[in-house]
Length: 217
Image (cartoon, rainbow, N blue to C red; front, side):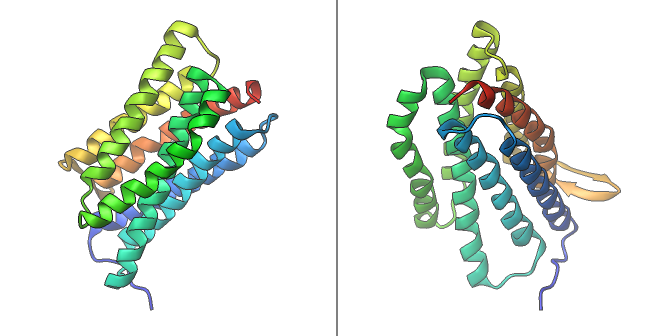
């Protein structure tokens, strides 16, 4: 029989993770209705699907009392899903910066990175620093690309994607600090706040992605 954890902050973290998963899957459905199809479109679908699955796994990991074996299984799967979400973001940024052909050539290499990160975490005994470095590299790269596209090239949809990246960056900084804790009906810590900040970011991402997918093959 499954039991909830006793920690109030872990429960709110699980609840916000579940909410984030719901929004990610709604974004996935909305994006499926975009007019164009192709590799670029599929990468955006991968972005939202991977993030949604990772958030569901996070809700389980934070909200339920799990055996040590199940817990050790869930976290690598969660990191792998988050890794593929980040990889998809890196590839769509590469597409919008350098074009489809460059993205196609580098896709196999980029798809290997999440496995490498999970392997490093496993060998390092769950060291979160490896994932943080990977996340920082992708977010900063995407920030550079879409900042350039939004302000210099004025590519349609890039401003919304840039806003999504900025929300993601703010959320990551809050989570990495580990110092946030507040009460708004329920008690939240830095992890719950991380999820709440990501929610408007997902809305920005899906708006920008729909615009870009209509213009790309």
